[in-house]
Length: 567
Image (cartoon, rainbow, N blue to C red; front, side, top):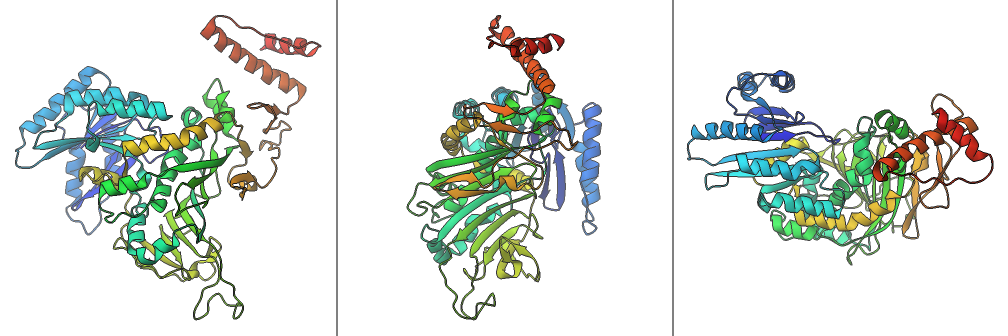
């Protein structure tokens, strides 16, 4: 296995995978190639660091007596190799060819190239890999994995797809969305298929009130401000992870859910975007100023997003799909929540939650992807909705939490199925790539269709000032559905810095598109304006060689220019 990586995304930077009784952890080191069968090469700082990581992270259970020996053998055979120049790729080719010369043709040999590098480097890297390392004869195969983001808009995504397609065939290209490899996500279609006799009749507009697809995180993006200024929460999470989850819930079930082509074709929906709300956590600009000289674009970077989308099909006619994601929220949790319409009326015996024939209360199905407050990831089904038939990858967990409420119901009011094996997502990614299984990856055709949907939404947010919110718990982000759109429930308020300073950290939107009002003391206002003026003027002069400035009358320009000279 070969890995090339320079991961600047929020996804985990490690892989744990199992082969028979062997447990391996591979860390993606920046700008490196990791190969489990390299012959000895000169040790350097990277080699030592890599070996230390592997020794620390690969764990052996007491029951596996062979693990320690296999661990030491594996760590010894893993080598660090930096790929920066054409000569480096040529050296890699020599190493790989020497390995092949010692192997027989009795079994097929495979190479996986895992690229977690900036998208701008994909095409050139893939070209170099094809020149030095590609193998595609009857005794071998090559596969290339690309980490998101897959472009920043439709045009860049199209260029990426065509650039990689020059060197690798469609069946050799694996666009990684690790959410599709999470244990519960992989069970969505099997769960639907196991319960299709009853569930497919319920999953339609006559019975579904709304569907919530949510990914909440407690961390921010400190240290990655430049990346987030380029992509924001919409490109980072909503355009890929959340839309892929939406497709698994809304697609028509094929006759055979194991058929990749059938599943892929049924995922291609026409979606209609209705509205979007955006927010930015209050310390984002503070972090941006510490990492960047020019923070002009940072003002408009959303770290929270909520959008309403409709699916263009009779089954889902006018059912609102609410996609939500954000940083620095109240919990780390991700889920799909299908809420059914409440049309039962209780007239007798209503003091208890159950009677012999009906269950009165919310009816919902929750695919709990990241377990949040629950003891495990899993699938929750309201007991009054149906008695689920669990697919073979899910087992039922007995619940005894009398005082634990989740999603507006006591946990005892749910039937709770959890994965038989809750395997880490990237372990599944590697395993599926090794076996040539593409259902957990994004097809290039679907990728381009996703950009058709999201490009207009991103364009809308580019000039939209996000609402500021406090870290962790802030009711200012609560919203409601109004006239097929979304709106915040509360009006925006000023947010102060933690130090208690009178300097406002809020920016109030004005009636002028893209403009906002900042409230500061006179001296601070002039100083901030002078600094901004200087940066914009220097950037304009470097680009065009001339700067034109127009001032209003009165004393204000003279006071402003005094601060410009001082700065």
